[in-house]
Image 1: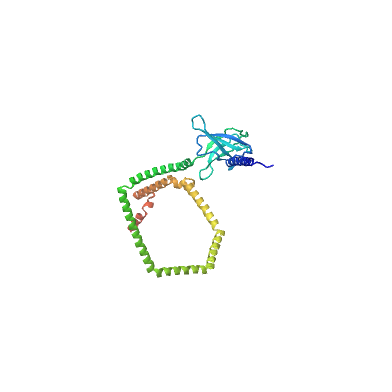
Image 2: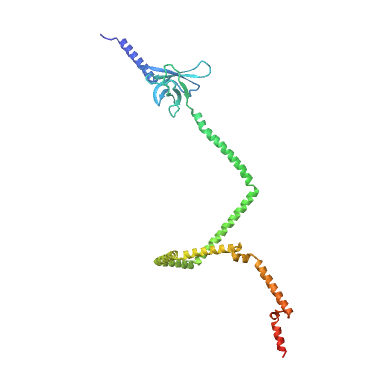
Length: 327
């Protein structure tokens, strides 16, 4: 039995159409032989997202973007259909975020899995989010720099005002004088350094001699280090001998004696004891003075009264003279 030519052409054509449909859907990310779920997300701006763009979970492609259409509420919101493989669990509070899939600006939808234990069902609406576009990212990066630049310009402006106020005509003159003074000081330093250089060259022999003598002294000290050690040991022995001698005891006894002497003088000053009474009480002095005055008066009276029975005590010399004159 021969198959007609028309049947062959019809079968081939059908197979070709089926392969074309399957390949077209395969290229679009649809798998006609696997079960799929469809979710929705509402955006205010999709930033160039188109149908058949990939859907990613943790960087792995799990589906594609389906139909994109506006809501009929005239507010400009866009509903995007998200076709995802059925075997992938997606929590109910997951986020569908429009992102850039490469450096050329191609878009994709990245599903950020939520923490809800309830899975999202078919035809559920996920939370929509959008990645900052290039302009927004640049603005966010430049905005802080712009603020810093404005602050810096304000500071520079204030600095220039202060600079103008400080560096007025008088200040410029003072600065000029200061630079002249610095120039003179540098000239003086050059002259001084030249003189020092000249002095070092002229006194080079003396300096060399001094250094030689210092070297000899150091050599002598190094050679006689043993003797110096013996001298130091002798001084140490002498100090030990002084420490072991009775000098400390004698110093202590002298200290005690000085303390006792200070106590005695303190008592004398306070009028304690016989010596203190004699020094501090003037009654004895007054009595002695009165006795001496009375004795002087007695002698005068005896000299003036030769007939007194005590007259010889007062005029012994005169009577002797008279007796020598009688013969």
